[in-house]
Amino acid sequence: MKRYLIAGLLVWVPLGVTVLVIKLLVDIMDQTLLLIPEAYRPEALIGFNIPGLGVVLSIAVVFVTGIVAANLFGRQLVHLWERMLARIPLVRSIYAGVKQVVETVFSSGQSFRKVLLVEYPRKDVWTLAFQTGTQASEAQAKTGREVVNVFVPTTPNPTSGFFLMVPREDLLELDMSVDDGLKMLISMGVVVPQWDSPSPVPADTPSTGVKS
Image: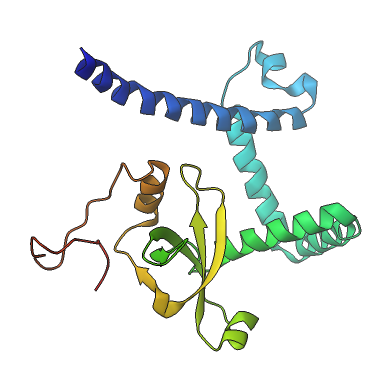
């Protein structure tokens, strides 16, 4: 009986969590319908609400915003808007920080493209990390060593973590995709990605799954 209950949970728990997450995202994006005057909202025109219309509207708003911001006039409007935000003490620091992170993630080809092993929080203890950048910084000039910017997520919530600047020679790159790395982190190591060893490993030698 216990085996059947576990098998059932393995089917329904992932499905239920997936449905809840998707529903949460759809509900959040459906709030964009509040931008439409009340008389022209779907529930007023057809008599009932259609879940998911906010997703379509959100995509349309983002797309149109991108078109406007990409031309000369739109860039001037964005610049004017950012100058206004820069005069608000608390808002300017939050906006500038978030914008810099978003620009780095979407424009850099190095951000979150590699899964690494780093010795943390002490020597001989390893954890997963994601490479976020390799740009030269004052840290490199001060230490005299090439450092790599890495993000060490916490588990099971990978949205929080620690930012570290680690010497390149102290990092090990894994043959693992970012998706597989996130699955391993969220599952707290229960889900271990399949790794095909390039060469036979002796029985008395532990396999690390690290590039040689």
